[in-house]
Length: 207
Image 1: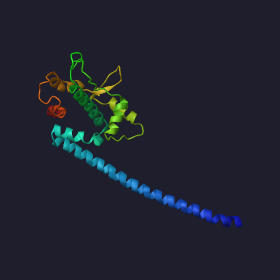
Image 2: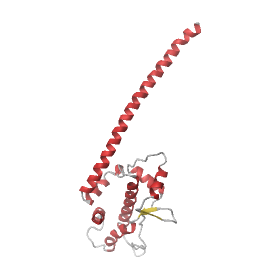
Image 3: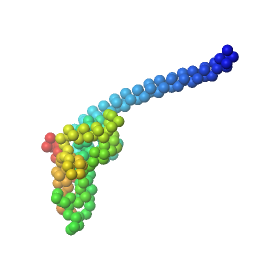
């Protein structure tokens, strides 16, 4: 009996600590669920505003906005949209970098032998690019999600030798920059945003 009486304070202390931990957990859970709900609502609103903004501003204005908001570049998109946008971004960026590299007689920049033009990316690079651009994967296996998304994506091409992927328009995107490289006296040779803006405008007019 004496032993049980001595144990009562210790048991009481353990139960009190357990109650406090349970209360803290429930409180934290409520805060998390509230924050999660607000996060999802903000994501849905961003996606809606993004669609409206893209259709209401010029290609140049859209490009400039994206350039300053890389962390949300692919946020609020479906997986197919995000992969397609990423591969297109890669092609434009690579073509712009190649166009900014001076030609030499031994490194001719052309469709057949593009100097430093590399629009191809691996599945892992696509996954990383989407994550860095704010895309939120739905599972703990984003590689499988990207693989599934690529399988059904009509706007991509795959190199069967290397296993790498590129946007189906990668040759056309390169052609946008060819005149600027072949004519070094053209004003605005290195005006990459202007070149991209013109290409985006052409794509919108085609649609």
